[in-house]
Image (cartoon, rainbow, N blue to C red; front, side, top):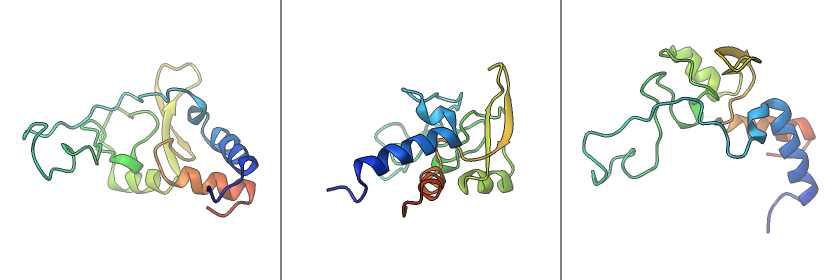
Length: 125
C-alpha cells in the first residue's frame, strides 16, 4: 500500500510538471548527456558504473541526482553541481529549443524535485 493517496499522487505529478515541464514528457528527454563507460568493460565486478548503479556525464561531470535536465555542454563547477542536486539550479533548453540555458529550479533528475513538489501541494515527502 502506498503512503500517498491517488489524489496526492496526481497533485504531486502536476506539481512536478509545474516545477519542470520536462517531468511530464514520456519518455523524458535524454538531455544530451554522454555516459561515462568504464574501461573495465561490462563485467568489471564491483564497479558502480558497470553494475548499473551510477550514471556520470563525461561532458558536464554531473552524476545521477546532480544531472541537469539538459547537458550544459561544458564542465560544471562543483558549486553548480551542488545547487543542481539541491534543486535550486538547472540547465534546460531555451524556448526555441536551440541552446541550453541556466535557470532557477529543479532538474528532472534530482531527488529534490519530488520533495519540492510535495511541499508545493502540502504533502509530507
